[in-house]
Length: 105
Image (cartoon, rainbow, N blue to C red):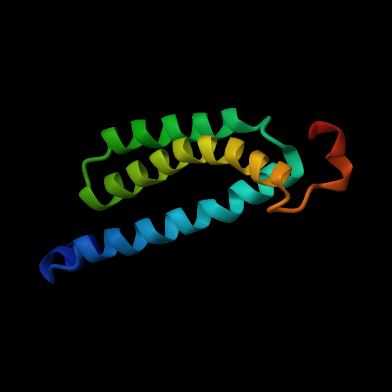
C-alpha cells in the first residue's frame, strides 16, 4: 500500500487525510472522557502519547511513523483539551454528568 502511495505521489495526501481523521477522533474522545471520568485519566493520554512517539521513532516506514507521531502528539494535546473541557462544562457550554456534580464548583 505504501509503495503504491509513493509511486503515485499520494503519500502526503494520505498522511494529511489520516491526520485529519486522527484529530477528529480525539475530539469526541476528550468530551466523553471528561463527561464520564472527569480529568482523572489525563495520565492515560500521556502514556499513550509517549508510547506512540517512541514507536514513531523506532519505525522506519515514513507513513506509519508519521501517523504514530500525529497520534502521539494528538494524545498530548488531549491532556490540555481535557482540562479545558472541564472549564467548558463549568461555563455551561457542555452538559454536566449528573453523577459527578460534586466535582464541579
